[in-house]
Amino acid sequence: MAIAATIPSAQFQGLRPVDAQGLTKKIVEPILKTENLWKLYRAGKVEVPALRGVNFSVAPGESVAVMGPSGCGKSTLLYTIGGLASASRGTVLVDGNDLATMSDAERTKLRRSKIGFVFQRFNLLPTMTAKGNIAIAQYIHGDGFDPHRFDVVTKLLGLEGRLNHKPSEMSGGEQQRVAIARAIINEPKILLADEPTGNLDTKNSDIVLEMLRQLNKELGQTIVMITHNPEAVTYFDRVVHMRDGVIVDGIPAD
Amino acid sequence: MMGEMILRNLVHRPIRTFIGIIAIAVEVALVVLIVGLTSGILSETAKRVEGVGADIMLQPSSAGVIIGMSNSPMPVKIKNRLEQLQYIQSVAPVLLQFNSSGGVELVYGIDKSFDEVSGGFVFLQGRNLQEPDDMLLDDLAVQSKHVQVGQKLRLFNHDWNVVGIVEHGKGSRIFVPLSTLQELSGATDKASLFFIKCTRPEHTDDVIAQMKTVFPNYTIRAIREYVSLMTSTSVPGLNAFVDAMIGLAVCIGLLVIFLTMYTTVIERTRDIGVLKSLGANSPFIVRAVLYESAMLCAGGILAGIGLSYALRAGFLRAYPTLSILITPEWILRAAAIALFGAVLGASYPAWVASRKDAVEALTFD
Ligand SMILES: Nc1ncnc2c1ncn2[C@@H]1O[C@H](COP(=O)(O)OP(=O)(O)O)[C@@H](O)[C@H]1O
Ligand SMILES: [Mg+2]
Image 1 (cartoon, rainbow over the protein chains, first blue to last red):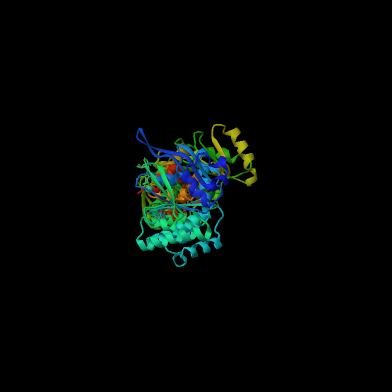
Image 2: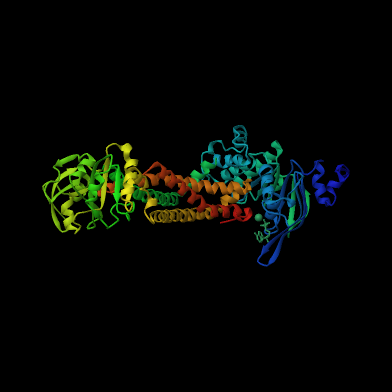
């Protein structure tokens, strides 16, 4: 734990060793950090805790896979750190901003500039072409259409020939690549992916995982991905395991 | 970008879009035609009175703006006293009679002095009134009655000989001799109104001033004043009726837009979640729904304008004497009313859309 000394102590107080281990490779402030994060869902009159004190942090440029049994709170964690859902307790720091203290509108604004989402079910707008689906993200981001960035991203994801197709005219693998393009078109600080290969066959899964790996290794894109795919371990820097709403360990991938 | 998204959404559901457009089109056409019909009839009536060519009109004290609504004719001999006033060129007594069998028509009973005031009819066929049973029709009345010069026409239980067809625009569409009409209606030596022509139009105000001292108990109006009074406001209840009809039309548009947009928002729950995940805020979602409804409405307005003209053409073909006035002003107003209704109708769906929970929306099936 020699490296621990170089970490600003105040910043990391309360971190469990597993998290500190994950940060040993990068001696910088985490881009994402949760402290004692709780999320309660209200089901009728009872409150169901989906997250029960999650401590989790991700360094810039890191790629982290989150694994765990169904219903353990993985999606909830992802939505909460992405600002789609509000935290019930604890803190969520994204690039230094505490989402837990923010209003809905403020979280939306932060999400717009710093977060990219990829979902298991692709979630492309069905009436728009691939190009439209990517461009709408640029439009919402507010910088208008940036042709250069658009070209770079679509080339990277091998979408050049598919841009004028609608989701219904594309394979699952292609749709997910469009979704990834849409998620990274505005250069988010963090890419959050919820089982992005869950609806894909092995071949397309491998393509998508490889692309995420490239994004991480070549562009330095920070990625947090939920997956059930054991192979994902080989593509990512680190794997985090969740159970019953808490993170139970953190094992460096290498 | 938002425009493209909205257009694609509208195209994606052609039947729903079509129904929305039709509803707005019906709304716009209803407004344009109801207003067009009332103002058309009123302005056409006003124009015909103006077309007589008189400067002043004298009516019984109880006379409203709508001619012939009063049933208390005046003695014809008033004419003699009028003719003694200064600056008066000619005076034409007219007895009005409504024929309400097969539509309401105003029949003018006139004598030779009507020509002096009006400068004479323009004859398209035939000749002027001479015999007691003669009748003149204007060209539009001829079209709707399907009669010709030389034929007989039964009116007020009396057989008339159609002796001439005149150009429309001089007071009425049907003219008969004053004395015959007086006899038939039991109003011997009576007249419903007097048209007065001054020696020069500039004398109108002077003449009216004189007349008011001599006939303090009568309604005396300059024709130009009469024409300006001939709007829906001078007919009791008409404005309220028109407003109620417009309100009904707006309700149709509003309800259909509400349902259309509400269904759309429910159907696109997941898309709304996607937009939110991309960072779209509530105003963005609200705008997207309102713009979509406005775009639908714009299509409906265009269709509605077309529908208005088509319906008017159809009605005028079937009923040549009908007058429907479609003005740019009222097209714009109908458009504004429709747009207002559409935005109002879409505002609740827009609010619902903007309030959707992003996570629930994203997992919606
Ligand atoms: N909207 C919700 N309302 C109530 N309970 C929910 C809601 N979403 C998730 N949960 C519950 O929270 C727990 C975690 O769910 P989730 O984060 O989706 O798990 P995972 O993604 O790991 O399968 C589960 O027990 C689930 O039933
Ligand atoms: Mg999940």
